[in-house]
Amino acid sequence: MVRYRRNLIAGGTYFFTVTVADRRSAVLVDNTANLREAFRITRRERPFTIDAMVVLPEHMHVLMTLPQDDADYPGRWRRIKGLFTRFVAPRLSIGPDSRGEYALWQRRFWEHTIRNDLDFERHADYIHYNPIKHGLVSRVADWPYSSFHRYVRLGFLPNDWAGDMGGAGSGFGERAG
Image (cartoon, rainbow, N blue to C red; front, side, top):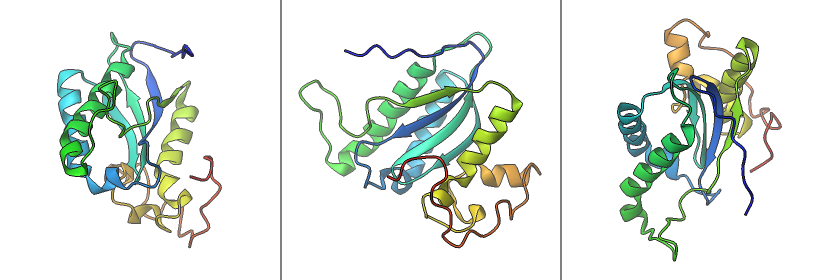
C-alpha cells in the first residue's frame, strides 16, 4: 500500500481538489444544499476557514485555513465527505461495497500547502477561474457555486474579473476531465 505523505502544519492554509468517483456526474452541483450542510456541520465540530471555494459538477477546489493549534485536515475531509454521502446516498441508490465504503468519492484528495501571499492569490484566482477553464461559463460571475461572489461583495475583485472568455477558457492548469 502506498503511504501518502501529507504536510500537516497547525494553522496552515491549504489548497485542495476533492473529486467524486464518477467524473461524468453532476452530484455536487445537483446537491449544493447537502454539500453546504456537510461543510456547516464539520466547521461547527472542527473549525476552519474557507478562504476560497468553487463547486463544479464532479469536483471542488477549496482554500482552507486551519486553527493555530490544529493540523488535521484529513479528518475534516473525511467528515465532509461522509456527511455528504449520508445525505445523498439514499436518493442516488448508492450502497456500501464489501468494505462498507460508498463509491461516491475518489478515495484520495489532492492537497497543496500555501507558502506565501502570492501562492495564496494564485490559487484563489485558479479556483475562481475554474468554471471557465472547464467550459461551464464564459464569465466567472456567471457561475453560482463560487466564493468569487463573496470576493466581489467584499471589494477584493471586480464583478468583471477575468472578462468574458467566450469559451476560450480551456487549458488552464488541470488535465482535461
